[in-house]
Image 1 (cartoon, rainbow, N blue to C red):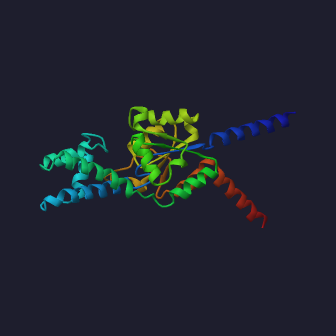
Image 2: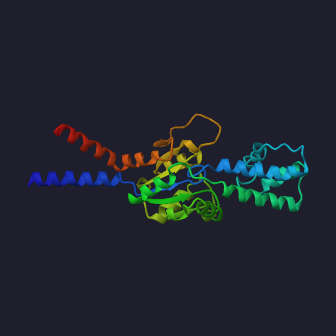
Image 3: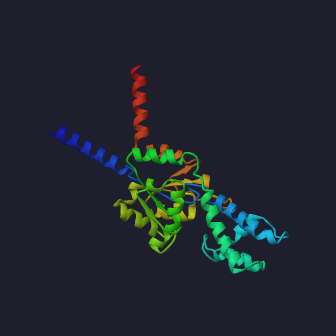
Length: 264
């Protein structure tokens, strides 16, 4: 009887451990995690300057100069007011030209979007593994849906959490909490993938979610990386290996391989 009780206790503990390490969902940041958004913004800025420069050959056509206006923090990272300020400060502003520049900006961003290598195949593999997928982004829903539609990924995600849905932006925890509640999951059952230490990794880890830092997409100036993530991804495809570690499948495969070697 004692042996039976001890066996049952070992089984119970093993089940608990396996449950705790089972990953049920992955929450993805979108821009610069699924695709290079900074690259398409620079293309859009370049096309705006080409349009404005048609009547002014002396206009400096450096896309980084216009792009820098989006980085000031005066308005949002996607706000058209950044374009307005640039035009007004150079005495290039007219309502018609401003409207044209905004249209160019939106068109070029979408047309030039390209997924990072392996994104589609990796997401498909995760779906086959039964992992639920969501996007948590600081973009508004209409922009997020347009981008995901453009790269043919909209239907790949069960849930989209955007800035206009939570009324705030990361690193505020609202995006993460909204996703967990909508999916009906606990923090330890979910993994956050994002390119920002400050806006993705740090807040997710404080909430108890697992974290994977998409270093391949971090475009910010080089600085010392605070070790507040569980895994670092050098490519998007690295994600599958880390999911295997979290779910114990890699360990299991290794032990089976070792067992086969010993039998031979």
